[in-house]
Length: 184
Image (cartoon, rainbow, N blue to C red; front, top):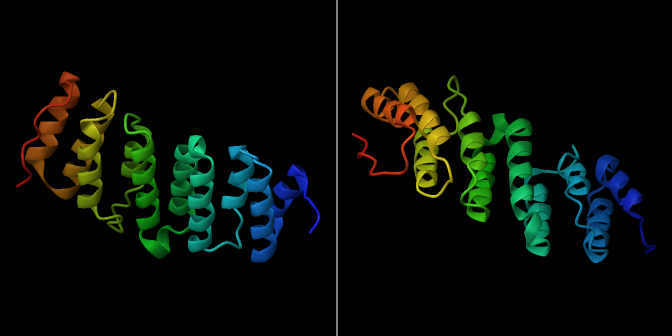
């Protein structure tokens, strides 16, 4: 097989309908040590790829270029949120927001993006999973105020007025992490 240029790889990622062709271009991109996240964003948006194939490429990319892992996971979460929301109930989006949070625990973006993907009419992803995820972030993010706001909103949607009020007070105080009361 002939060596592809970065531009040819990009075009393959954007428009190819053949998995084998995309896979070969991906292998060449890794072999050539192309660590441009913009290149791989084209790959993740390829309409032909299944969620499992996107995960395969994303996991391999994050392993090969660990400095890109956070961006890869955030981008995959965004793709899954937009393209497969009706099919997998945001499970893959939430999974990749979790992976991004593990990669950069002090960043609030994975937590807030996950909270923002909640669909109240469809009740997906399960609100309890989002609440638990945001609570995990309170103790590790640099500024938890945004998480307090999202938690107040999610508790309000779930009908838990006590916890909603608690997190509203935390938001107003702008306080640092503290003991969170147990959910009733």
